[in-house]
Length: 419
Length: 164
Ligand SMILES: Cc1ncc(COP(=O)(O)O)c(C=O)c1O
Image (cartoon, rainbow over all chains, first blue to last red; front, side, top):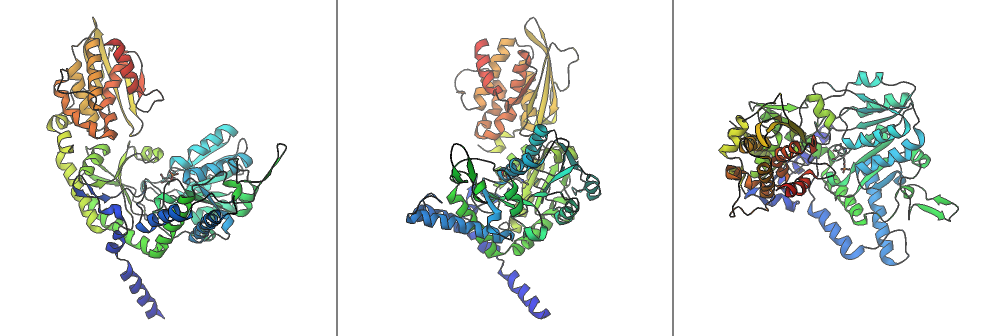
């Protein structure tokens, strides 16, 4: 038995062939300024494999019509493919039911849906909402808007120097006024993986629902919403090899049913008269108007693609990249990595003595290297470290170790220019 | 354009040793400029006497392009009249947006080291920030931002064309 496991493990690790995977991504073979592209801005948006591109082309070539509306052939095909994508996403996050998956335009839209549908209905003056220092602006601003409208209060979980949440402080924030927790699963600015399971359990002991912003988790680690027992989970397709303009919101069916719709219009109703409108059941109640059908189907294809590789394999390869890149950047004199949590995805935010991140980004781009520079829509994190901005290299499973070497040479070149 | 030609020695030198760096205590005009996209900010203080920029200083937190642009700007406008400064602001702006014919007569002199920035649209704002902060100071607008609802860069062109 034990031997079988080892054999299985050997078998699967032999299967992870980064060269073969890279060949799936046409964009990875372009040149930038005469140099091969080294794409290390995956946390902002990832690239798309041929399989997903082909799926979009096939849909647009042979399957397109509006969904849920007509009895003709194409409308039935498109509706069927659209709902199949919902099923794929349901399986990807292990939701109990398909109707618990709502298609949105992205993480930001998903969070706004919860703020309007849940927050505006259930949060009152004086209530408290717990967020963390690590949140992306998209999980801060909607709650601030709600707090302002309702007279609610936002409480913030601090982080330590490594970029890890202070769990003691989190638990101490709870009181009888606590009504909601918004929690980032993986920090986009630092890569910290938060102990969300433990934090959800604690919130539930106080009967407080928890929304997880999984934008940076879903592309990198396996997600199981039933095991987490989160109340809401959100992420975007474009960060996991899918198209832009689409994302998902998982919500427990009982909560989604109790919520008010976010947007009104076609496709979200059961019946309409000028006296009274009855809303459709979930998930359609939250999908007003014609959705980005092609993008949703592409989202499904992206999830298929990731599953064909295996999320565990993806996580293992990316961890290798993280360790190697961390070691090499730490060895550069004058470089400092921000975010050194024990549990991290392959995101490395760094600063260089005497060089502004924007200059780093421009000079690296000259070497074909794409990194993100700026505050990463996480200004509270920047304030915590007392820097205006960082440079961020964020890896995907299609990056390889030689690209880390190119990054290191690029950083050394920046230092030479600014000597 | 190659960044090698943007990050030229002149720019690196002004970044390392910015001229007129600091804050004037008795400024007649001042303004703060922000670039919220990168968190950069700088302030400009100046002393206007008989319509001439007698003294000028800048201070702030920014990238090399912005700092060198500010440093070279202060040396370029010191001693100039307000309207000469506005002409320079206008020409510098047009140059960075690729709208200035560098072959035709202009007043930019060594500031043309920034001409390559027109090929890096994301960095144009870094180079322009000091200039529109100067424009704000000269026109008693105390606070400008590269991301304001009224595009300050746009305002420069409108206001500057009034004054040139
Ligand atoms: C952690 C996190 N949350 C939310 C978002 C917002 O995602 P989107 O812009 O796709 O709505 C991002 C991405 O920018 C992110 O990294």
